[in-house]
Amino acid sequence: MLSRLYELKDEVEIFLQKQKQDKLYEAFREEDFQLSLAYLVVIFEAINNLNLKLQGRNTNIIAHSDVIRAFTEKLHLWKRKVQVGNFSSFSHLNELLSEKRNIEQYDVTKEVFSHLHSLAEEFMHYFPDVSMENSLYTLVQSPFNTDVELLLESLQEKAIDLKCDSSAKRDFETMKLEEFWGKYLPMYPKVGEEALRVILRFSSTYLCEAGFSALVVLKTNQHNRLDVENDLRCALSSFNPRISDLVRKKQQHPSY
Image 1 (cartoon, rainbow, N blue to C red):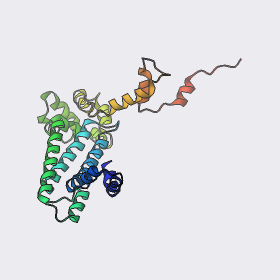
Image 2 (image 1 turned 135 degrees about the vertical axis):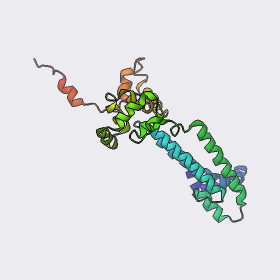
Image 3 (image 1 turned 30 degrees about the vertical axis):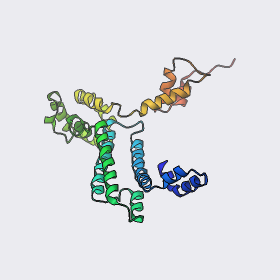
Image 4 (image 1 turned 120 degrees about the horizontal axis):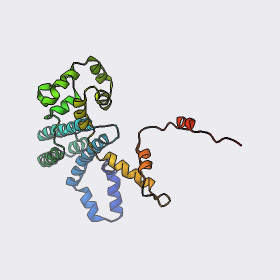
């Protein structure tokens, strides 16, 4: 939305002027507003891209943690670059500053740096980076490179058994994280249970929102049963129904 507004800013100025919205016209043309808009276009685009990466069914807290950590690292990078007057990461703002040489760059640097700093602190508050401090996360992500002595004593010997399992190592290189731990759960139950506790955590509200959306579709005035459990399970399932197999197993009505 902001990017579209920025692209049409000249047209918006003309529209406000023709509509005789003098206050809005003057406010829209103000230098501070134009600079803020140019900066926020890039920030909101980055946050929207982050939000898209946090959605989807086949994901887990490990993958989401990596995505969020990458974004916070970008924020720190942007802060360091802005602090020395480098706005190359913000294309629209950089272009605007290049066109208007008379702008006091110190004020722009101060405002942008302050906002990036606040944004980074908010992300660290809401998404604390526990994965780097938790040896269990390391075990789940890379069971064959983890330091077993950092694990709980009850897991250390079983983790060594898994670490020395060559067939498991080959499977880990080709299988998804959830598939790997699901397969080796019967062979290494203690380690597998702890790993699945990490993987199965809800790392976003996407599945809950998808469930509510499916419920809204199912519960209508024409279909308003209170018990929608079976229908909802079918609507949210990622498995494709094998209709041909189901039909084959059903007895056909004999003709009389």
